[in-house]
Image (tube, rainbow over the protein chains, first blue to last red):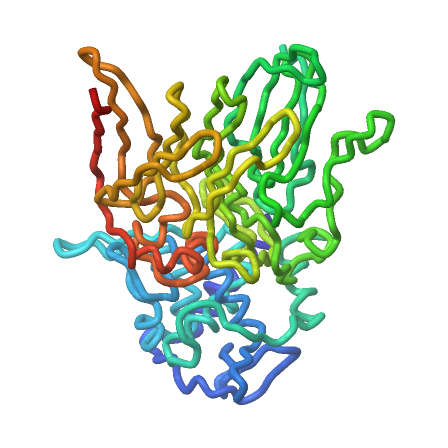
Amino acid sequence: MRTVRLMVAAIILVASGHAFADEPGDPTAAKSENGKYLDKEGNPTFHVAADGTVDWYTYSGYRRYHSECHVCHGPDGMGSSYAPALKDSLKHMSYGEFLAIVATGRENVSTAQENVMPSFGNNKNVVCYLDDIYVYLRARANDAVGRARPAKHDDKSPEIQKAEDSCMGNK
Amino acid sequence: MAKWVYQMTPHDEWDYDGVNEMILSDQQISGTARKLLTHFDRNGLGYTLDRATGELLVAEKYDPKVNWTSGVDMNKSSPTYGRPKVLDQYSTDKQGEDHNVKGICPAALGSKDEQPAAYSPDTQLFYVPTNHVCMDYEPFKVSYTAGQPYVGATLSMYPPPGESNMGNFIAWDGKTGKIVWSNKEEFSVWSGALATAGGVVFYGTLEGYLKAVDAKTGKELYKFKTPSGIIGNVTTYEQGGRQYVAVLSGVGGWAGIGLAAGLTDPTAGLGAVGGYAALSNYTALGGTLTVFALPQ
């Protein structure tokens, strides 16, 4: 549990380092590190090869999104009657803002709407896969992947496996 | 205090919870009267046990396409007596996380889910609504957080390779573990069955038909299209000296989740949406009680 708390603290620091008004920026992958793609700002992003093969994070994010997020935000980031379409939200939301909202939750309550998102800061199935979910939704927001499960994906690199094991606390 | 216990799927790797009903009957096996318990498990095996002693008498596939196991060890002196032999190629545990295990039959829905079978003491047969569905199953790592849901696998469901029917309505001999007759259905049979003393068996289909078939042969005698898909249980009763048959229609449940909840992603609904995508071409949402009076 301590690692998770530390991670949430780190997330909030990262988040406050970015101005909330930031746009997500150019999603083009500028470099890759052990199967993880980064844009020129150093934020995680997607990579889709000419034959449709997606990077591991996009694929993993598809799975995590549909385990943890889709009951409120709808299949494929399409939204529902009680939570916004993240394939649209992510067009204007920065990486830092995304992390902060998932970690701390959010309330948009007015006479017109009553959206209340809980904090996922202590749910390892979310916290350990924040970049995966972000990359998948960023790909959806940029129409880089369609609806439904990506047919082909890169393998999971040993470094990604190691980071996952460490975060999830598994042997 | 439990008298005995039997586990159908030890170390379940496919979501084959043993939630289905147990049907009690008194039948002769090898010339001896036995008090029996028959159970059609999600895992695709039909079990008959002596309900007084817990002795396992029969464990056989009630859908020939079931492939995750080569069968149950019936040798009483074996250390694995009563356990199913699992095939490595369909073991989601052996193949491991992030590996998509393809072509497992049955799907997580089970060869039958909670829709109840019926027993006729006249024919000594069980009438079983079944799912004829296989799946791809890809497990991934998850951890438990109190108060929050979690799912550790992504699934796709489809009919067995080379076939298009996703259901069968079968008659089963629980004494021998054999299918006596089998009627193909385009979609899974998700209604409960009703066996009657008149030699007629009733069930409903996901397209919305109530069907009456001959208990001995399975021959279709009558069908009627109700306003929606049938996942309710067919029932019969008498009032004022006249017999009635009634059924609730209104599609839903795991098989009908795509139609009922408006889902379109083929892997949504734990993979059920893809397999049943065509259902909307046959029926609509609704909720209606349809009652039939028998001729006087």
